[in-house]
Length: 390
Image 1 (cartoon, rainbow, N blue to C red):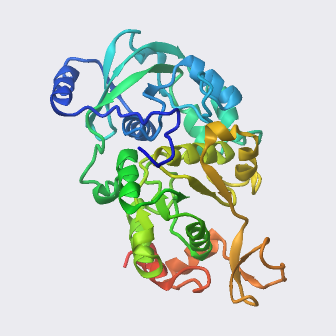
Image 2 (tube, rainbow, N blue to C red):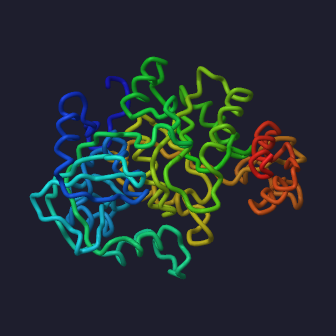
Image 3 (cartoon, rainbow, N blue to C red):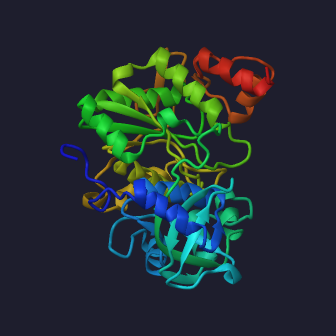
């Protein structure tokens, strides 16, 4: 669309069937072999269908897989950091040239796929790419998920017949489930030419709010874009997080400069490489500037604090196009009486208010609000209600 950043690869993909084409696919699926998708694969199918994974039109073949894990590029040369694959057990792999019906975990027909390639799933290579040089201790959730996947990949384009496979589910958010085409249309409607995006899988605390506000100062608008696909056990449920985002935006953000929409992707917890994926996806949504904070998409201590920022330094800027906004760790300073970072205020022992996730959860479970300098009281109250079951 004129005036907005170009989608990755130049064209915004749309693999969602409509009207008579959709009806014909549903009818055809009745006689096709059935493949049941995992939650991650189902998320990936939706992301492919709506164009969020442009330029991908389906699950990756071997040439793309090898190039991605080896050099963070698709075979055509476009930057791409992580494999997007559909893996099955070898005994269940369909023949090349066949068509198969893909069903979501809840039993809903999601897509029809044309199988163009079948190849061995190099799970070790994919796991090493996710680890990015870190030691495999058998506890990384993204790596363990890959190890549990099938030993054979099937590749080919998909035609999606049901985008949101559970429209009545707690994570459907139909009013906020905007496709890349829809966010681009909304940006144009609002006259936004530069847009910053904030990726999150957690409630937004004061430090995150500070990053968002800084980004708003330099762009026309802000897309708060929480991930609502598959996450690891123990993460705060998406419906609870959405209540937090909505209340925070209502009370503390300028409505006409802020847009809340959800991203139906699965977390891979791949740190630096996933930071690139999150940036490219937001580029497809029409975003020009992407916030990359401390330990973006990380888990545990597998990655360095700012590895997810440093990895952007070595990428082809002409192909990347979206601008990473790199922020250092921020916290509330009692002396400065405001949010500060290592770039803006000297470090003073005991000055900054910082709480670990464990400490925050303990307070919430006791019905206690964390300090207002750490999280807004309105957000804390929503989380207390969830944590205590009140």
